[in-house]
Image 1 (cartoon, one colour):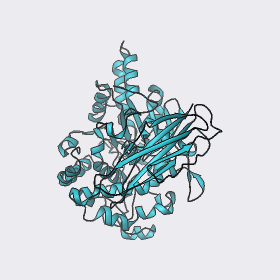
Image 2 (cartoon, rainbow, N blue to C red):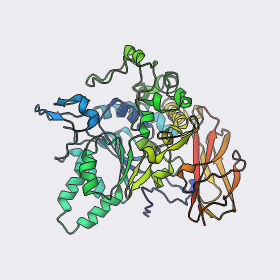
Image 3 (spheres, rainbow, N blue to C red):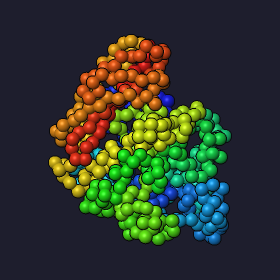
Image 4 (cartoon, rainbow, N blue to C red):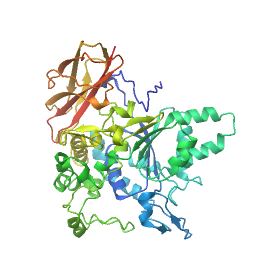
Length: 494
Protein backbone atom coordinates (compact mmCIF):
# COMPACT_ATOMS: atom_id res chain seq x y z
CA UNK A 1 0.00 0.00 0.00
CA UNK A 2 1.26 3.41 -0.87
CA UNK A 3 0.01 6.47 1.00
CA UNK A 4 1.13 9.98 0.06
CA UNK A 5 0.58 12.70 2.64
CA UNK A 6 2.05 16.12 2.01
CA UNK A 7 5.81 15.54 2.13
CA UNK A 8 7.04 12.05 2.81
CA UNK A 9 4.91 9.47 4.55
CA UNK A 10 6.24 6.16 5.63
CA UNK A 11 3.35 4.77 7.65
CA UNK A 12 -0.38 5.20 8.10
CA UNK A 13 -1.03 7.89 10.67
CA UNK A 14 -3.80 5.90 12.35
CA UNK A 15 -1.64 2.84 13.07
CA UNK A 16 -0.61 2.49 16.72
CA UNK A 17 2.94 1.71 17.86
CA UNK A 18 2.19 -1.96 18.55
CA UNK A 19 0.84 -2.45 15.04
CA UNK A 20 3.93 -1.18 13.22
CA UNK A 21 5.86 -3.86 11.36
CA UNK A 22 9.35 -2.48 10.82
CA UNK A 23 8.39 0.53 8.64
CA UNK A 24 12.00 1.52 8.01
CA UNK A 25 12.38 4.46 5.62
CA UNK A 26 14.50 4.13 2.46
CA UNK A 27 17.35 6.61 2.30
CA UNK A 28 20.49 7.42 0.31
CA UNK A 29 23.42 9.23 1.94
CA UNK A 30 25.59 11.54 -0.17
CA UNK A 31 28.63 13.08 1.49
CA UNK A 32 31.63 15.25 0.65
CA UNK A 33 33.67 13.91 3.57
CA UNK A 34 34.31 16.82 5.90
CA UNK A 35 35.27 16.08 9.52
CA UNK A 36 31.70 16.72 10.63
CA UNK A 37 30.44 14.34 7.92
CA UNK A 38 32.66 11.70 9.47
CA UNK A 39 31.22 12.29 12.93
CA UNK A 40 27.69 12.31 11.47
CA UNK A 41 28.50 9.03 9.71
CA UNK A 42 29.67 7.39 12.94
CA UNK A 43 26.38 8.28 14.64
CA UNK A 44 24.48 7.18 11.55
CA UNK A 45 26.01 3.71 11.77
CA UNK A 46 24.45 3.36 15.23
CA UNK A 47 21.01 4.13 13.71
CA UNK A 48 21.24 1.83 10.70
CA UNK A 49 18.93 -0.60 12.53
CA UNK A 50 16.13 1.98 12.25
CA UNK A 51 16.73 2.92 8.60
CA UNK A 52 16.76 1.18 5.25
CA UNK A 53 19.93 2.63 3.75
CA UNK A 54 19.96 1.85 0.04
CA UNK A 55 22.99 3.88 -1.02
CA UNK A 56 26.07 5.62 0.41
CA UNK A 57 27.69 7.86 -2.19
CA UNK A 58 30.81 10.00 -2.24
CA UNK A 59 30.07 13.42 -3.75
CA UNK A 60 31.69 16.86 -3.91
CA UNK A 61 30.75 20.30 -2.61
CA UNK A 62 31.95 23.87 -2.52
CA UNK A 63 34.24 22.82 0.36
CA UNK A 64 35.61 19.50 -0.94
CA UNK A 65 36.43 18.23 -4.41
CA UNK A 66 39.04 15.84 -5.82
CA UNK A 67 40.02 17.59 -9.05
CA UNK A 68 40.35 15.81 -12.38
CA UNK A 69 44.00 14.83 -12.01
CA UNK A 70 44.91 16.95 -15.05
CA UNK A 71 45.69 20.20 -13.26
CA UNK A 72 42.44 21.85 -14.33
CA UNK A 73 41.78 24.95 -12.24
CA UNK A 74 38.43 25.72 -10.66
CA UNK A 75 36.96 28.85 -9.05
CA UNK A 76 33.78 28.61 -7.01
CA UNK A 77 30.72 30.80 -7.49
CA UNK A 78 29.49 29.97 -3.98
CA UNK A 79 29.91 32.75 -1.39
CA UNK A 80 31.24 30.48 1.38
CA UNK A 81 33.97 29.01 -0.87
CA UNK A 82 35.41 32.23 -2.32
CA UNK A 83 37.98 32.20 0.49
CA UNK A 84 39.68 29.25 -1.23
CA UNK A 85 40.34 31.06 -4.53
CA UNK A 86 41.23 29.15 -7.71
CA UNK A 87 42.36 25.57 -7.11
CA UNK A 88 42.93 22.23 -8.82
CA UNK A 89 41.50 20.31 -5.82
CA UNK A 90 40.21 21.23 -2.39
CA UNK A 91 40.48 19.44 0.96
CA UNK A 92 39.67 16.09 -0.66
CA UNK A 93 39.92 13.14 1.72
CA UNK A 94 39.66 10.30 -0.75
CA UNK A 95 37.17 7.52 -1.40
CA UNK A 96 38.08 5.07 1.36
CA UNK A 97 37.13 6.76 4.62
CA UNK A 98 33.52 5.45 4.54
CA UNK A 99 34.75 1.87 4.11
CA UNK A 100 37.25 2.40 6.92
CA UNK A 101 34.48 3.45 9.30
CA UNK A 102 32.41 0.46 8.25
CA UNK A 103 35.44 -1.69 9.15
CA UNK A 104 35.36 -0.12 12.62
CA UNK A 105 31.60 -0.78 12.73
CA UNK A 106 32.40 -4.42 11.92
CA UNK A 107 34.40 -4.64 15.15
CA UNK A 108 31.33 -3.78 17.26
CA UNK A 109 28.67 -5.24 14.96
CA UNK A 110 28.20 -8.52 16.83
CA UNK A 111 27.59 -6.63 20.06
CA UNK A 112 25.19 -4.18 18.42
CA UNK A 113 23.27 -7.14 17.00
CA UNK A 114 22.68 -8.42 20.53
CA UNK A 115 20.63 -5.28 21.14
CA UNK A 116 18.85 -5.25 17.78
CA UNK A 117 19.05 -7.96 15.13
CA UNK A 118 18.08 -5.36 12.51
CA UNK A 119 21.59 -3.89 12.35
CA UNK A 120 22.80 -4.50 8.77
CA UNK A 121 25.95 -6.49 8.23
CA UNK A 122 29.17 -4.62 7.45
CA UNK A 123 29.33 -6.49 4.15
CA UNK A 124 25.89 -5.21 3.15
CA UNK A 125 26.80 -1.63 4.03
CA UNK A 126 30.01 -1.84 2.01
CA UNK A 127 28.05 -3.07 -1.00
CA UNK A 128 26.12 0.22 -0.95
CA UNK A 129 29.20 2.47 -1.13
CA UNK A 130 29.69 4.11 -4.53
CA UNK A 131 31.80 6.97 -5.92
CA UNK A 132 29.71 9.74 -7.42
CA UNK A 133 30.55 13.09 -9.03
CA UNK A 134 33.60 14.25 -7.12
CA UNK A 135 35.91 16.05 -9.54
CA UNK A 136 34.73 19.61 -8.88
CA UNK A 137 32.05 21.51 -7.01
CA UNK A 138 28.78 21.14 -8.88
CA UNK A 139 30.16 18.83 -11.60
CA UNK A 140 27.20 16.95 -13.11
CA UNK A 141 28.21 16.58 -16.74
CA UNK A 142 29.20 12.93 -16.52
CA UNK A 143 27.53 9.72 -15.39
CA UNK A 144 29.39 8.07 -12.51
CA UNK A 145 29.06 4.84 -10.58
CA UNK A 146 27.27 6.79 -7.85
CA UNK A 147 24.87 8.68 -10.11
CA UNK A 148 23.99 5.49 -12.01
CA UNK A 149 23.33 3.72 -8.72
CA UNK A 150 20.97 6.49 -7.61
CA UNK A 151 19.30 6.46 -11.03
CA UNK A 152 18.63 2.75 -10.70
CA UNK A 153 16.99 3.26 -7.30
CA UNK A 154 14.80 6.09 -8.57
CA UNK A 155 13.61 3.97 -11.50
CA UNK A 156 13.11 0.69 -9.60
CA UNK A 157 9.68 -0.88 -9.07
CA UNK A 158 9.59 -0.10 -5.35
CA UNK A 159 7.35 2.95 -5.05
CA UNK A 160 8.34 3.62 -1.43
CA UNK A 161 9.68 7.17 -1.13
CA UNK A 162 13.46 7.59 -0.97
CA UNK A 163 14.98 10.44 1.01
CA UNK A 164 18.36 11.54 -0.36
CA UNK A 165 20.47 13.08 2.37
CA UNK A 166 22.63 15.82 0.87
CA UNK A 167 25.57 16.32 3.23
CA UNK A 168 27.61 18.13 0.58
CA UNK A 169 26.54 19.18 -2.89
CA UNK A 170 23.45 17.95 -4.74
CA UNK A 171 25.43 17.29 -7.92
CA UNK A 172 25.51 13.48 -7.90
CA UNK A 173 21.74 13.28 -7.38
CA UNK A 174 21.34 16.00 -10.01
CA UNK A 175 23.40 13.92 -12.44
CA UNK A 176 21.16 10.90 -11.81
CA UNK A 177 18.10 13.04 -12.59
CA UNK A 178 19.76 14.51 -15.70
CA UNK A 179 20.56 11.02 -16.95
CA UNK A 180 16.92 10.01 -16.47
CA UNK A 181 15.79 13.14 -18.32
CA UNK A 182 18.25 12.52 -21.17
CA UNK A 183 17.05 8.95 -21.57
CA UNK A 184 13.30 9.50 -21.39
CA UNK A 185 12.46 13.14 -22.19
CA UNK A 186 11.85 12.44 -25.87
CA UNK A 187 9.95 9.21 -25.29
CA UNK A 188 6.28 8.48 -24.71
CA UNK A 189 7.18 7.32 -21.20
CA UNK A 190 8.45 10.73 -20.07
CA UNK A 191 5.34 11.95 -18.25
CA UNK A 192 5.03 8.63 -16.44
CA UNK A 193 8.73 8.57 -15.53
CA UNK A 194 8.74 12.21 -14.45
CA UNK A 195 5.80 11.63 -12.09
CA UNK A 196 7.24 8.39 -10.73
CA UNK A 197 10.60 9.96 -9.87
CA UNK A 198 9.08 13.19 -8.55
CA UNK A 199 6.71 11.27 -6.29
CA UNK A 200 9.49 9.01 -5.01
CA UNK A 201 12.41 11.35 -4.38
CA UNK A 202 12.72 13.63 -1.36
CA UNK A 203 15.83 15.78 -0.93
CA UNK A 204 17.04 16.80 2.52
CA UNK A 205 19.57 19.58 1.88
CA UNK A 206 22.10 20.66 4.48
CA UNK A 207 23.10 24.23 3.53
CA UNK A 208 22.75 23.54 -0.25
CA UNK A 209 26.49 23.36 -1.01
CA UNK A 210 26.62 23.79 -4.78
CA UNK A 211 24.48 25.34 -7.51
CA UNK A 212 22.98 22.18 -8.99
CA UNK A 213 19.75 22.23 -7.02
CA UNK A 214 19.11 25.88 -7.83
CA UNK A 215 20.15 25.77 -11.48
CA UNK A 216 19.04 22.28 -12.51
CA UNK A 217 16.86 20.30 -10.08
CA UNK A 218 14.46 23.11 -9.14
CA UNK A 219 14.09 24.04 -12.83
CA UNK A 220 13.85 20.62 -14.51
CA UNK A 221 12.31 18.67 -11.60
CA UNK A 222 10.15 21.23 -9.78
CA UNK A 223 7.82 18.55 -8.35
CA UNK A 224 10.55 16.82 -6.34
CA UNK A 225 9.92 17.41 -2.63
CA UNK A 226 12.72 19.31 -0.87
CA UNK A 227 13.51 19.91 2.79
CA UNK A 228 16.00 22.78 3.03
CA UNK A 229 17.86 22.98 6.35
CA UNK A 230 20.00 26.10 6.14
CA UNK A 231 19.68 27.43 9.69
CA UNK A 232 18.71 24.81 12.26
CA UNK A 233 21.65 22.47 11.62
CA UNK A 234 24.10 25.10 12.87
CA UNK A 235 23.26 24.29 16.50
CA UNK A 236 24.76 20.83 15.89
CA UNK A 237 27.64 22.23 13.85
CA UNK A 238 30.80 24.26 14.43
CA UNK A 239 29.18 27.34 16.12
CA UNK A 240 27.12 25.26 18.58
CA UNK A 241 28.27 27.28 21.59
CA UNK A 242 26.61 30.35 20.14
CA UNK A 243 23.56 28.53 18.75
CA UNK A 244 22.56 26.00 21.41
CA UNK A 245 21.01 27.10 24.73
CA UNK A 246 23.39 27.07 27.69
CA UNK A 247 21.22 24.39 29.30
CA UNK A 248 22.21 22.02 26.49
CA UNK A 249 25.95 22.74 26.59
CA UNK A 250 26.72 19.96 29.12
CA UNK A 251 25.54 17.42 26.52
CA UNK A 252 28.10 18.79 24.04
CA UNK A 253 30.95 19.21 26.50
CA UNK A 254 34.23 17.33 26.62
CA UNK A 255 33.32 15.71 29.92
CA UNK A 256 30.11 14.27 28.47
CA UNK A 257 31.76 13.05 25.26
CA UNK A 258 34.71 11.51 27.08
CA UNK A 259 32.46 9.53 29.44
CA UNK A 260 29.67 8.60 27.06
CA UNK A 261 31.17 8.36 23.56
CA UNK A 262 34.91 8.64 23.01
CA UNK A 263 36.52 6.48 25.66
CA UNK A 264 35.96 2.78 26.31
CA UNK A 265 33.16 2.39 23.76
CA UNK A 266 34.90 0.35 21.10
CA UNK A 267 36.70 0.95 17.82
CA UNK A 268 33.95 2.86 16.02
CA UNK A 269 33.48 5.58 18.61
CA UNK A 270 37.18 5.70 19.35
CA UNK A 271 37.53 7.29 15.91
CA UNK A 272 35.03 10.08 16.65
CA UNK A 273 36.58 13.54 16.16
CA UNK A 274 36.56 15.97 19.09
CA UNK A 275 38.40 19.11 20.10
CA UNK A 276 41.92 18.47 21.40
CA UNK A 277 41.85 14.74 20.57
CA UNK A 278 45.18 14.77 18.73
CA UNK A 279 43.65 13.54 15.48
CA UNK A 280 44.49 15.24 12.17
CA UNK A 281 43.12 14.77 8.67
CA UNK A 282 46.32 15.54 6.80
CA UNK A 283 44.68 16.48 3.51
CA UNK A 284 42.29 18.95 5.13
CA UNK A 285 44.18 22.07 6.15
CA UNK A 286 41.06 23.40 7.90
CA UNK A 287 40.97 20.45 10.30
CA UNK A 288 42.93 21.90 13.20
CA UNK A 289 40.48 20.94 15.95
CA UNK A 290 42.62 18.13 17.33
CA UNK A 291 45.49 20.52 18.15
CA UNK A 292 45.35 21.50 21.82
CA UNK A 293 46.95 24.89 21.08
CA UNK A 294 44.21 25.66 18.55
CA UNK A 295 41.65 24.27 21.00
CA UNK A 296 42.69 26.72 23.72
CA UNK A 297 42.86 29.59 21.24
CA UNK A 298 39.21 28.94 20.33
CA UNK A 299 38.15 28.74 23.98
CA UNK A 300 37.31 25.03 23.83
CA UNK A 301 38.11 22.19 26.22
CA UNK A 302 39.48 18.73 25.56
CA UNK A 303 36.94 16.43 23.89
CA UNK A 304 34.37 19.18 23.36
CA UNK A 305 32.00 18.52 20.47
CA UNK A 306 33.16 19.78 17.06
CA UNK A 307 30.25 19.33 14.65
CA UNK A 308 27.65 16.94 13.27
CA UNK A 309 25.92 19.35 10.95
CA UNK A 310 24.57 16.59 8.70
CA UNK A 311 22.93 14.43 11.37
CA UNK A 312 19.51 16.16 11.25
CA UNK A 313 18.99 14.68 7.77
CA UNK A 314 18.71 11.16 9.15
CA UNK A 315 17.48 11.94 12.66
CA UNK A 316 14.44 13.31 10.80
CA UNK A 317 13.77 9.74 9.62
CA UNK A 318 14.23 7.91 12.94
CA UNK A 319 10.78 6.93 14.17
CA UNK A 320 10.59 8.05 17.80
CA UNK A 321 6.84 8.65 17.62
CA UNK A 322 6.83 12.32 16.61
CA UNK A 323 5.42 11.64 13.10
CA UNK A 324 7.73 14.23 11.56
CA UNK A 325 8.07 12.30 8.30
CA UNK A 326 4.37 12.84 7.58
CA UNK A 327 5.00 16.56 7.26
CA UNK A 328 8.26 18.38 7.97
CA UNK A 329 6.27 21.18 9.65
CA UNK A 330 5.33 18.83 12.51
CA UNK A 331 8.84 19.01 13.96
CA UNK A 332 11.05 16.31 15.42
CA UNK A 333 14.64 15.23 15.94
CA UNK A 334 15.53 16.48 12.44
CA UNK A 335 14.14 19.96 13.08
CA UNK A 336 10.93 21.65 11.94
CA UNK A 337 10.53 23.20 8.49
CA UNK A 338 7.60 25.18 7.10
CA UNK A 339 6.16 24.81 3.62
CA UNK A 340 7.32 27.75 1.52
CA UNK A 341 6.34 26.50 -1.95
CA UNK A 342 4.35 23.67 -3.49
CA UNK A 343 7.14 21.14 -2.95
CA UNK A 344 9.56 22.87 -0.60
CA UNK A 345 9.92 23.11 3.17
CA UNK A 346 12.37 25.58 4.72
CA UNK A 347 13.64 26.72 8.09
CA UNK A 348 14.83 30.20 9.09
CA UNK A 349 12.52 33.01 10.13
CA UNK A 350 9.41 31.19 8.92
CA UNK A 351 10.05 28.16 11.17
CA UNK A 352 10.93 29.47 14.61
CA UNK A 353 10.04 27.87 17.95
CA UNK A 354 9.71 29.70 21.25
CA UNK A 355 12.87 29.30 23.33
CA UNK A 356 11.93 29.39 27.05
CA UNK A 357 15.51 30.21 28.04
CA UNK A 358 15.56 33.46 26.08
CA UNK A 359 11.77 33.94 26.05
CA UNK A 360 12.01 34.69 22.34
CA UNK A 361 11.26 32.93 19.08
CA UNK A 362 14.43 31.19 17.96
CA UNK A 363 15.51 29.94 14.48
CA UNK A 364 17.47 27.03 15.90
CA UNK A 365 15.19 25.99 18.77
CA UNK A 366 13.19 23.56 16.60
CA UNK A 367 16.43 21.53 16.65
CA UNK A 368 18.07 22.51 19.94
CA UNK A 369 14.99 21.60 21.99
CA UNK A 370 15.82 17.92 21.42
CA UNK A 371 19.59 17.95 22.10
CA UNK A 372 19.46 16.38 25.56
CA UNK A 373 17.22 13.47 24.55
CA UNK A 374 19.12 12.91 21.30
CA UNK A 375 22.45 12.85 23.10
CA UNK A 376 21.16 10.42 25.71
CA UNK A 377 19.97 8.20 22.88
CA UNK A 378 23.41 8.43 21.25
CA UNK A 379 25.04 7.50 24.57
CA UNK A 380 22.79 4.48 24.99
CA UNK A 381 23.73 3.19 21.53
CA UNK A 382 27.39 3.81 22.29
CA UNK A 383 26.92 1.46 25.23
CA UNK A 384 25.39 -1.13 22.90
CA UNK A 385 28.79 -1.30 21.20
CA UNK A 386 30.43 -2.79 24.30
CA UNK A 387 27.79 -3.81 26.86
CA UNK A 388 25.49 -6.81 27.04
CA UNK A 389 21.72 -6.37 26.91
CA UNK A 390 21.18 -6.52 30.68
CA UNK A 391 23.84 -3.86 31.33
CA UNK A 392 22.52 -1.28 28.82
CA UNK A 393 19.38 0.79 28.50
CA UNK A 394 16.77 0.57 25.73
CA UNK A 395 14.00 3.01 24.89
CA UNK A 396 10.43 2.55 26.12
CA UNK A 397 7.65 1.82 23.63
CA UNK A 398 4.63 4.13 23.81
CA UNK A 399 1.14 3.16 22.69
CA UNK A 400 -1.92 5.41 22.66
CA UNK A 401 -5.27 4.18 23.93
CA UNK A 402 -6.95 5.75 20.90
CA UNK A 403 -6.18 6.98 17.42
CA UNK A 404 -3.40 9.53 16.99
CA UNK A 405 -5.80 11.60 14.85
CA UNK A 406 -8.85 12.88 16.70
CA UNK A 407 -11.57 15.45 16.03
CA UNK A 408 -13.41 17.63 18.51
CA UNK A 409 -15.57 20.75 18.65
CA UNK A 410 -15.06 23.98 20.56
CA UNK A 411 -15.79 23.44 24.25
CA UNK A 412 -15.47 19.66 23.99
CA UNK A 413 -13.25 17.72 26.41
CA UNK A 414 -10.65 15.60 24.61
CA UNK A 415 -9.60 12.57 26.64
CA UNK A 416 -6.07 11.27 26.07
CA UNK A 417 -4.36 8.14 27.30
CA UNK A 418 -1.16 6.23 26.71
CA UNK A 419 0.72 3.26 28.09
CA UNK A 420 4.46 2.73 27.99
CA UNK A 421 6.28 -0.58 28.05
CA UNK A 422 9.93 -0.45 29.02
CA UNK A 423 11.98 -3.43 27.80
CA UNK A 424 14.38 -3.10 30.76
CA UNK A 425 11.53 -2.90 33.33
CA UNK A 426 12.57 0.65 34.22
CA UNK A 427 10.10 3.09 35.70
CA UNK A 428 8.75 5.68 33.28
CA UNK A 429 7.42 9.21 33.61
CA UNK A 430 4.82 10.89 31.41
CA UNK A 431 4.63 14.45 30.14
CA UNK A 432 1.85 15.73 27.88
CA UNK A 433 2.50 19.07 26.17
CA UNK A 434 1.22 21.16 23.30
CA UNK A 435 3.60 21.66 20.38
CA UNK A 436 1.85 24.91 19.53
CA UNK A 437 4.27 25.98 16.77
CA UNK A 438 3.11 22.94 14.80
CA UNK A 439 -0.55 23.84 15.30
CA UNK A 440 -2.68 25.76 12.87
CA UNK A 441 -4.66 26.92 15.93
CA UNK A 442 -3.05 30.15 17.12
CA UNK A 443 -3.78 29.83 20.85
CA UNK A 444 -2.80 27.70 23.82
CA UNK A 445 -4.53 24.84 25.57
CA UNK A 446 -4.37 23.78 29.21
CA UNK A 447 -3.55 20.08 29.64
CA UNK A 448 -5.01 18.66 32.85
CA UNK A 449 -2.55 16.69 35.00
CA UNK A 450 0.11 16.46 32.27
CA UNK A 451 2.31 14.01 34.24
CA UNK A 452 -0.26 11.19 34.26
CA UNK A 453 -0.75 8.49 31.65
CA UNK A 454 -4.36 9.60 31.25
CA UNK A 455 -5.23 13.26 30.80
CA UNK A 456 -7.53 15.63 28.97
CA UNK A 457 -7.96 19.17 27.72
CA UNK A 458 -10.89 21.34 26.73
CA UNK A 459 -10.91 22.65 23.16
CA UNK A 460 -10.81 26.48 23.48
CA UNK A 461 -13.85 28.51 22.48
CA UNK A 462 -11.96 30.62 19.94
CA UNK A 463 -10.96 27.76 17.62
CA UNK A 464 -12.04 27.69 13.99
CA UNK A 465 -13.24 24.71 12.00
CA UNK A 466 -10.26 22.88 10.54
CA UNK A 467 -7.78 24.15 13.15
CA UNK A 468 -5.29 21.56 14.35
CA UNK A 469 -3.86 21.13 17.84
CA UNK A 470 -0.74 18.97 18.32
CA UNK A 471 -0.38 17.28 21.71
CA UNK A 472 2.80 15.31 22.48
CA UNK A 473 2.92 12.41 24.92
CA UNK A 474 6.54 12.27 26.06
CA UNK A 475 7.68 9.22 28.00
CA UNK A 476 11.09 8.95 29.68
CA UNK A 477 12.50 5.98 31.55
CA UNK A 478 14.79 6.16 34.57
CA UNK A 479 17.57 4.08 33.09
CA UNK A 480 21.12 5.27 32.51
CA UNK A 481 21.13 7.19 30.29
CA UNK A 482 17.44 8.08 30.47
CA UNK A 483 15.71 7.45 27.14
CA UNK A 484 12.66 9.17 25.67
CA UNK A 485 10.00 8.21 23.14
CA UNK A 486 6.76 9.89 22.12
CA UNK A 487 3.33 9.73 20.57
CA UNK A 488 1.78 12.73 18.84
CA UNK A 489 -1.96 13.29 18.82
CA UNK A 490 -3.33 15.72 16.24
CA UNK A 491 -6.78 17.04 17.11
CA UNK A 492 -8.70 18.64 14.25
CA UNK A 493 -11.52 21.02 15.11
CA UNK A 494 -14.89 20.04 13.62
